[in-house]
Each structure stands twice: as structure tokens, then as C-alpha cells.
Amino acid sequence: MMSEFPFDDEHAPLYSLGQVAEMLQVQHAFLRRLDQHDVISPSRSSGGQRRYSRHDIMIVQHVTRMTEEGMTLIAIRRILELERELADVRRQLDETRSRLNGERR
Image 1: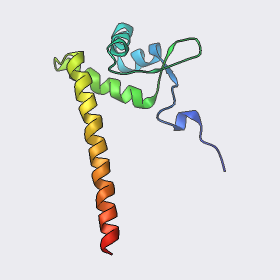
Image 2 (image 1 turned 180 degrees about the vertical axis):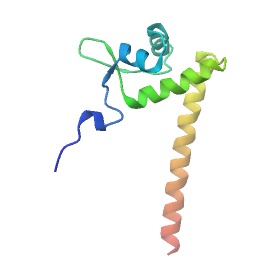
Image 3 (image 1 turned 90 degrees about the vertical axis):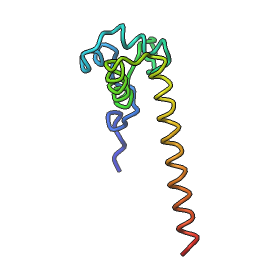
Image 4 (image 1 turned 120 degrees about the vertical axis):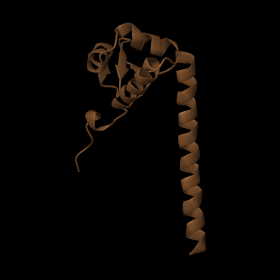
């Protein structure tokens, strides 16, 4: 059985700040500001450089759209928190429904 490669894992921190800035056409300072405001917290290399995963990049894209709509980073951070909470509640609801459906059989 072949092991997974790091690039198969959407959470593997493979991309540098410069690569992400170029990919998404954003300024390096914008990505640093997202990290400083705890909007996104990329991993760090052994040398302390920010390393982004594909998952992180998707979040930065989402954040970029929200900033283009005029939202502040504080508001965006709260929206991301609420989106995570909603996803958790939906997952719990699905698990509960599955359990209940299993008990009815």
C-alpha cells in the first residue's frame, strides 16, 4: 500500500507566503496582517517562515472576498468562528440523526 504524499493532504503546510501571495494576487503584508489578527494562522517552518496548506489558501480566498465587500478583519474573524461552529453543529446533527435511524431499525 502506498503512503500518502504531503500534497495529497489538504492540511499539509506546503506553500510559502510569497507563493500564496502570487497565487491569490494579494500583498505579502495582507497575509501577514491576517496572521497578526488571528484570522488565519499558518504553520511555521523550522526557520520560522509561514507555511500555508491548501485549506489555508481556501480560507484566505474566502477572506479576500469578504474584505473586497468592505468587511473588517475583526468581523471576518467572527464570521469564520461562526462558520466553524455551524459546521460542528451540522456534523453533530448528522451523527445524531444517524444514531436515531440506527435505533429505529
